[in-house]
Structure formats: C-alpha cells, structure tokens
Amino acid sequence: MAHRKSLTRAAKQRRIAHFLAQPLQAAAPGQSATLTGLQKADLEARTVGRVVFPWDADYDTDRQ
Image 1 (tube, rainbow, N blue to C red):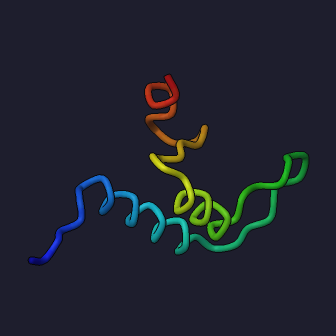
Image 2 (cartoon, one colour):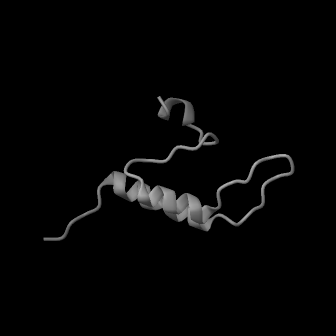
C-alpha cells in the first residue's frame, strides 16, 4: 500500500526547497550576518515543526 505525505510534511518540503533556491547574499553593512539558504534549509529539515523567522509574514501569530 502506497503512503502519501501529510499536508504538513509536503509544506515542510516546499519550505526547504524554497530555502535551497535562495541565492547567497552577504549581510548588509551595519547588520549582523544572516543565515544562508542552505543553513535555513538544514535547520528546517532537522527541526520537528516549523521554523519561523522574524521576517515571515505570520511571525507574530506563530511565535505565540
């Protein structure tokens, strides 16, 4: 019997793919270093649940 991915698992894999597709960029002058897309994808893949960053649109509701 074939198993389908849950909606949560599929969403997680889409977020990981999105992070991996991000170009490398240096931190802006006067700002601390940022995470690379590869680092974000790795963090998301190793975390149970969803990683929410301060620049995410739903950050304020998700962090509570």
